[in-house]
Amino acid sequence: MDKTVDEKFMARAIELAFRGLGGVNPNPLVGAVVVKDGKIIGEGWHKKYGGPHAEVWALNEAGEEAKGATIYVTLEPCSHQGKTPPCAKRIVEAGIKRCVIACVDPNPLVAGKGIKIIEDAGIKVDFGILEKEAKEVNKVFLKYIENKIPYLFLKCGITLDGKIATRSGKSKWITNELAREKVQFLRTKFSAIMVGINTVLKDNPSLDSRLDEEKFGIEKRNPFRVVVDPNLESPIDSKFLHFNDNKAIIVTSNDNRNLEKVKEYENLGTRLIYLEGKIFKMEDILKELGKLNIDSVLLEGGSGLISTAFKENVIDAGEIFIAPKIIGDNSSIPFISGFNFNSMEEVFKLSNPKFNIYGDNISIEFENL
Image (cartoon, rainbow, N blue to C red; front, side):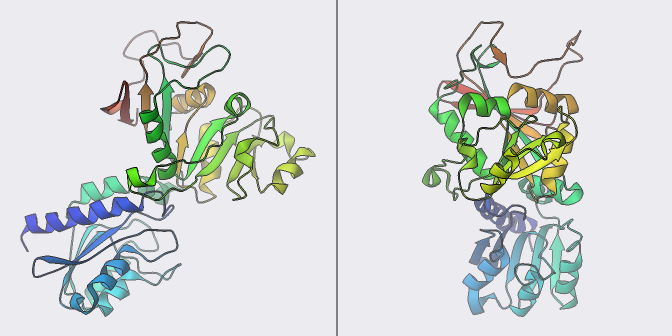
């Protein structure tokens, strides 16, 4: 098969994979396309965690026509019985003649086993088509499956002088409505949102997603709501605690384990994570969240948590929104502080910056530091 033809159909499979954003975590985003005589006869993507995989949707749409066809899949088909049957066997049963895979699944439960099932059935397998692009789609999954540490994405809205709030803690609204719409998309995209206790005390945020589903083309999903609260100060009537979905998490000191207040939180369905001391390492927080199958975290602040994440160099990517506003007050709150660099060679540098425009706001997307 002509490589350009393979790339054309794999590109379509990758495009489909993106439609599962926010709905499949901690599973990977996967798209599949069934092609016969140069025409697409079936398409699918993994839509919801625990639901049918991309290959199943595509093969079901193709029906009997799948026999003798080629299937393009962005990730190696699974070989194990989980919440759904193994896709590799489904491909064999459908009578597929050729299977084109973008990249091998690093998950130890799969890792080459899906390919073996397909090849053992006499089906030709080719892989590596648009591999780089397919891995980019699943960078969250790939990091988590390899080390069980969630992917950390920083979101921050700042003024031109780098502030996130006035001296009184007021921050509504630094950024405009378009920028805030993008934030709702990020809250749906990632498994959890994290803020510090000061954000809760000053703003009483809901920490939910209010995504415009029609505009962004994906289904809204509320993330886990993580509050780092060393002294267990979160008011019982805090909005983030009252969704009846068991997705509220408080990270607090082990010293608070026996407080009467703990039972009040637990009665609301809140999970408490206990760490030693009162000043937590971001790495330790992420490890504990990883144990809960949380594969990605959107860090929204405040200044203390953001500074800690920069200090520990644990930020995988981020988007900083900048509004054309200036506070100009030394007592206002900066988005990052506590560093004493003496030269520009020492400062933090954002890798692979990409600039976006949201009306009169701009943003800088970046990867790593």
